[in-house]
Image 1 (cartoon, rainbow, N blue to C red):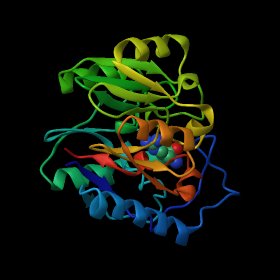
Image 2 (image 1 turned 180 degrees about the horizontal axis):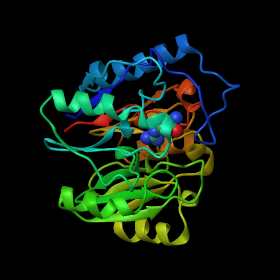
Image 3 (image 1 turned 180 degrees about the vertical axis):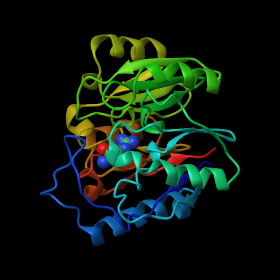
Image 4 (image 1 turned 120 degrees about the vertical axis):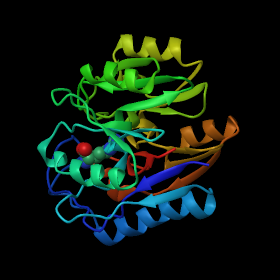
Length: 264
Ligand code: ARG
């Protein structure tokens, strides 16, 4: 069973614009965000049996809830993110302290190379797929591969709306991954289609609802509500789908997967 890191949305809000989804004139409903976050927490813990550890929210860090961007965990090593935007760079010491206090070895990357953690690096079997350009830099990928001791395949993210890999690519198990073809260039699509044993394309409507930003726990998939075609497809393949409305987090450019970081 997986263990995840989450951060309650006490100080969540749309306070700046660093991706095409964010619009300061379209604020998040704080009470509703708390309710939606709590439903996700309950879904993962009570209903799916995962363990969730918590990071204390910090005033002035509205995106801290997107723990997927903290870094990448490999055993007792924590590969710390280098955020692209200064607004999120302020989260680095908070994440670093949490991991340090729990005995993780902190591995910073060369400061010149941006890297946004699990948001841009996801494994299928023994291979990591890593997104670059919008947030992470390709220069970070080799270092990550050396630390993880595995192959890293770099995928250029071609559409600014799908700015992190986890918005358009979602491993389901050791052989299968969802992907939104139009988020990649022709070469990236080729890499996915030849390196993932069973790549499953997602339709534009479902991809734009962040259907690829799903959390997988065994054969259970936590999916944003309304991704009907994807939901049917997943059920046909033997997955149990749990739909949740995460509308308030869409306003910041995220959904279920961004709100968790895998710790084991
Ligand atoms: N507002 C946040 C940002 O733009 C959202 C992060 C979403 N995280 C993710 N892993 N896709 O950085």
